[in-house]
Length: 270
Ligand SMILES: [Fe+2]
Ligand SMILES: [Fe+2]
Image (cartoon, rainbow, N blue to C red):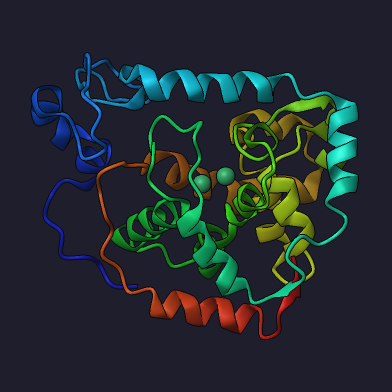
């Protein structure tokens, strides 16, 4: 993967720093006017920038989804797992599902706001290219990790699709995450569709990518600790750290489409 030509300090730009001086006065491309500029979680010391947390219209809706999601119960998880044993799209080419992410908006995400999940994926890929990441599995994870958000297009309630996940029932220390019951979302849905087609560490990372990697180690068995260190811990900073509602990545998607076609030569049940 070649290094990009961009000379802007990317981390600052993608974090939205470049917007802070203009957004307050002029509003942003979404048409909203920012009422105030507040520090966002994860910002660097001394840096402030605009996020949806400063836009009440968006933030209230995002908060409502996160609250509903936090109330998911074990019984609901079991019912959702059962519901999605059946395919919702039938046999599909995986690349087509990735393209469908262009129609998927995560209304709970204060960092992306109305930015599509397809652009979120592109932002991650661009950041990885910039850092000259060489591990093919990390690119594959980036392409596939949010593919489960196509559930939104099948009219699933957002609180059953998006958001961070935590175990509702924890396993013993070192027992392995499959013995826990995590909240249900796009992660588990995608895992069930992809697990027979991708390397095990990629499937595992997709399944748990919405959990905080730093919280998982105590429950992982030895094999999962390997996956956590080799893949999830490396992927998650890209997933969480390069969200922008204004930055449109300029990358060549042809090679990524080839990677997906190579990984999934046949349509799969989705
Ligand atoms: Fe996700
Ligand atoms: Fe993501």
